[in-house]
Length: 254
Image 1 (cartoon, rainbow, N blue to C red):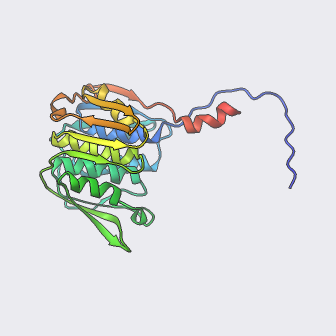
Image 2 (tube, rainbow, N blue to C red):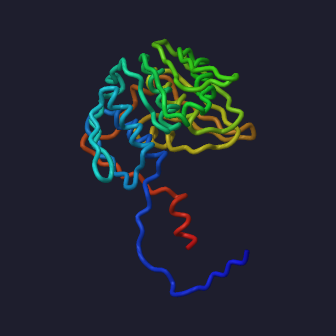
Image 3 (cartoon, rainbow, N blue to C red):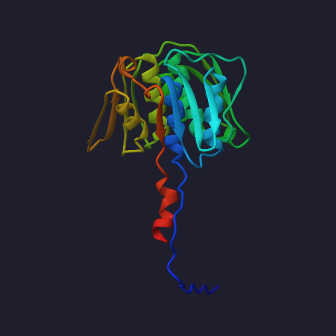
């Protein structure tokens, strides 16, 4: 097939780039764990981000949906409430994986599930390191794979180190959140630097996150007692989620 593209007039105008989905997830999570009210401005946020908001509503956080985001009335690190209902994470792998670390660190009972597609996605890479820290978390074993639903029971986390064979921001973030909620030291070793949204946001909220890069890989340590340093979002503040560079790339090239 031959395709001919004939140039016309140069394109001009303005476009609104959708908010970065990964940062939006973390914004809702951290706002829910903050003390006070946070307005999250996230234009174009989609269904996966709504799944995170719905999950925290089920844990007792008041979250009001607005046209371009949410108003979150945070409960603090000790304010999440258990629910007897199974929590539906929709199709969002980020939601179920990161929140597993939060729930394990908080020592809460929970059962997390999702839609048909999510329930086929592997959860062992989250469950195994959390169990190594002392978490009581179990998935549904099918053909040697650990899948949703995930069942989490209260436990005393002991912190520790975890080495990833493949760099994963979701695994790293789940462990850092578990360390934040439990107050334990956590170190994650990864072969290369994965997305560092969680580290940057925690640092901006007063938490010391040590990061080193050497020939062995990238090493991230959240010190014990990080929960005492956590300031969260300021009460009454507004946080605008930056645009997604991958969505912007098409327009930049054009």
